Image 1 (cartoon, rainbow, N blue to C red):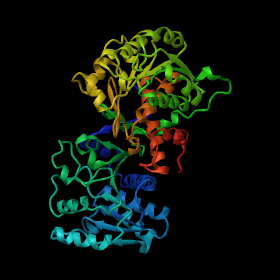
Image 2: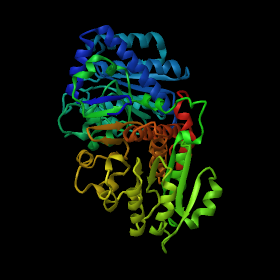
Image 3: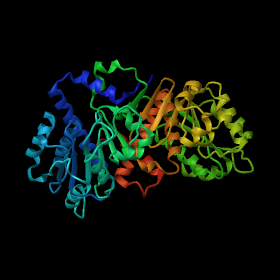
Image 4: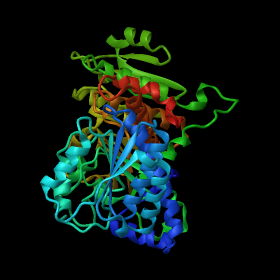
Length: 527
């Protein structure tokens, strides 16, 4: 079991039961939770808006009659308080205000009082409104510049599906508009609800970000709707610090953002380089030299005390000059530039002092190189991270103690090693920790699956996986974390650095290696 802060992922029915037990009809408690949720949404949106698209001076809030609508109104209030005074908001309600829940009305009154003329309220969507009527209203309000952000607080997890008109037409219209700015779903995108298989994807209101408020509901994790939910953020409201959290038999978890604080600890006054571990990295080939350098630099940035890197001898002079903090070991090469089995004796010599092992980046697919990796794993008995070309059944099936391995495949690499098993079946059979990389990386251990939400599309470029290998390897080498916690922290740290990189430099014009410059800033809260 991980020692890190994990919260369960619940189905919609489980979440409803949990909230009923948690609040016990306490309307004031619900109001406090609504305020925490709305403020968290506002802060998250403020950060995400800074890394995207042109900003205009207006927000659009789509407001249903329940708590999601209330969260959106509280978020709008906080946004208007923290954004420049020229920013205004347009509220577009689903039903007349007097049909809304009491706490939503309370949120509306506070917004009106705080923002005054900066808030414009549109008429509610009538059942008689056709597509042309809705389009006319939207055209009038978007004008030429549109909105900087749109908050979807229409329907929550109790929505009745499939949607009917006029809401169905409304969703279709909004999905096809390109001037609504950054699209934010509060808790769940409208049209995504319930525990049944998703049958009406076209009726889900598309989001760029979904902010899961308090509880991550399982529908947002379905791969079939990934394009509708956008990037997921988990906004922890403290629900699972209560005794009520013990009532479910959990299988799926989400890692709290606060877990990353575990890495930030004061180094002891009495220490030296040996106090922070020794990673042995076996990587690179003549054709894929950069991957080895990226993994090595990531391990150093992750704070490992000593780093030894076995590389093809032709790379040695340039690499040793570029990153002298590492101990670069020149190893014999195959005719095609890969690592030769002949180097095993030299590897053995340096491996004996290592506290962790990492391999894969840039190795290539030569059989002789894979034999070297396989033999190295038979010698070294400590924790090991395998990525890229080291993820090969001929290597993995020969490891005598797979429970010490952290495997970091993307979907294609997992298909190569899985032999038809799904991720949960694979880890139950093999015992390794599986880091399945993707838009929302999943870390699978023997009895649980942990979803690491966050990150940025700036990671969708060559080299980001090599950096992750080095970061996880560096964490494991320190000896503070077991393979599961080391993998989880590595994934979250890597993702958080990518969020800050995107925030400060955007998603397009960046180098993958620049992510390392933001590892140290991942513990800061204000950018």
